[in-house]
Image: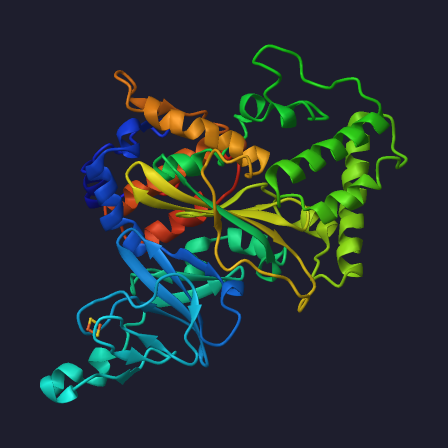
Length: 461
Ligand code: FES
Ligand SMILES: [Fe+2]
């Protein structure tokens, strides 16, 4: 690595110097939060909306990140993004979702107007302004960079940042193989968590917490959990017959479906329920392989029979690396399992609060009528209406945020094998704060976007 990159990294406060140790101040220090706001968010591709939020001409949504707001609008010439500020004296033009097809955007202060394409169409009393101030190029809405992937619009405030696909890296191909662009919303929830945005993300970047946080899932692990029941205990659920193994897998996936909502969809659980009596070898490992082969085949068949844009799950599982959690730096997740997925987006609000959204996504037949949510249902984080699994994760997070402030707590200590994802993206944040070459950062993002339970990786700096 070049000396100047090294010295820039050395100047990052609370930098991750040992990849297994994450300094606690990164989760609450106001100056570190300000650096993220200045050096990270203005330069990264951000999932701004799902395109199904704006299906009709003139439909728009507002995407906010910290003190910035962008309007994403469906226009005659495709979906566009504009910085959300009146060109007169700066009032935000759009709040929340809406449709501007007939009225366009009208500033509530002095009534200037724009059409769907962002072109200014009206200024009261033009004669009282110097003509050059009202140059079309000056008073049209200012476009924001936009690109598309996975059925979503992504924005970037930096016109010089590497492209979206280049920044995503191989994760995009892995998810394209699963028809990610065809997924449709089943439901959409959101909550404000009293935690730093990074802490909220990290609860979903490793499976090491399953034993304690989600014991209902751990108990149903048919081949035992890689970590054992505790460090020294024998693995769970040994000695099951083939048939018992199959039934435990179905129980597990049903629990994952109901508890996670979305990751395994109800329609898929219904198919799996039909496999409880399937003939399998008596060896649990062979039974497991037979069960999953059949599950992939039957869920694929069911989707195709319903006219869903289904992919061949068995083929994809053979040809494409699988991760139950896929992360797209900086704040977007997709969690594939069979055909359906869960999805998360986590946005910082303050140094110690964030907005956490969850979607349940399914492959639904094109054109099938569905009452697609226009906005997330916002619940308190401890609401019993959240699915069981995120609710269990949300329980720990506020306690963790408080604990990080304790005297003598200097670092999180990470498992180098299982909690590497946390270290990898945290070090990428340091790269942004140090202002490293954008091409180097994009390449690192491709490595960081490498999925669940990954080891600590060399991200190139
Ligand atoms: S601030 Fe918008 S028209 Fe004056
Ligand atoms: Fe969890």
